[in-house]
Amino acid sequence: MASPSFRAILFDLDGTLLRVEMRSFIPRYIAGFYACCDDLVEHAPLQRAMRAGIHLLLETECGKRSNEERLFTFLAARLQLEEDLLRARFARFLATGLESLSDEIFEIPEADSLLKCCQQAQVPLVLATNPVFPQTLIEARCRWAGLDLDYFVLLTSLENSYYCKPQGGYFTEVAAKLGVDPQECLMVGNDTSHDLSATDIGMKTWLVDSYLLERDGLTWNPDYRGSHQDLLDFLQDHFLT
Image (cartoon, rainbow, N blue to C red; front, top):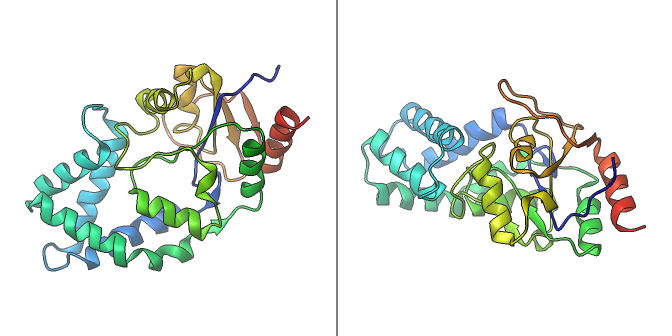
C-alpha cells in the first residue's frame, strides 16, 4: 500500500502512548471521587452511577452538549443531588486526590520517539484519548508517563468534546477543529473498536498491537498494523527519508 500524506495524526493514549490497566484504574478513580463526597452518597450508588454515566457517553450520541454537561446532569439525576454540589466535590478530587493514582501508569519506551518524529515533520498531533475523563486527569496521566503535552495541538477531554469513540462524530469533530479533511488524517491506537472506527469517516488507521485491546461488537480492519517499533519505523520512513 502506498503511503498517503497525513495532515494530522491522532494518537490514542491508553495502550498506545502509556500503559494502564483500566480494570483497576477506574475503580480507584471512582473511589478517589467518593472520598471527596462520602458525606453525600454511599460508595456503591456512586460507583454504579459513574459507570453508567461513562457508558452513556460511549453508547449514545448527542452532539449538542459537552460530555461534561451530559455526565453531571446524569449523575445529579441518578443520585438525587445538586449538580453544582457534585461538580464542586469533583473539582476538589481533581485538585487534591489525583496523585494517588500515579502508580497505575507506566511508560511505553517508544512513545516519545513516535511523537518527536511527527513533530520533526511538522505534522499536527492530537491526543485522541476517549473524552470520558477531565483534562486535569489526562494531563496528569501524561506527566506520570513522561509524555510532553507540548507535542499536541489538541487534547480531547470530558470538557471540550461532544462525542466519544467509537462514534463517527468524535472523529469528525476533531478533524473540523483542525480544519483538515478526515481522509488526510491517521488514527493510531490499540483498540480494534474505539480507534479503528475512524475508518467510517475515511481516516486511515494504524493498529498498534503491542497492547492490543479487542472488544465484543463491531470492529474494523486497520490500514496498517504492527508493534510500537513497527510504527516508529513507518513514521521515520514516511517523514524523515
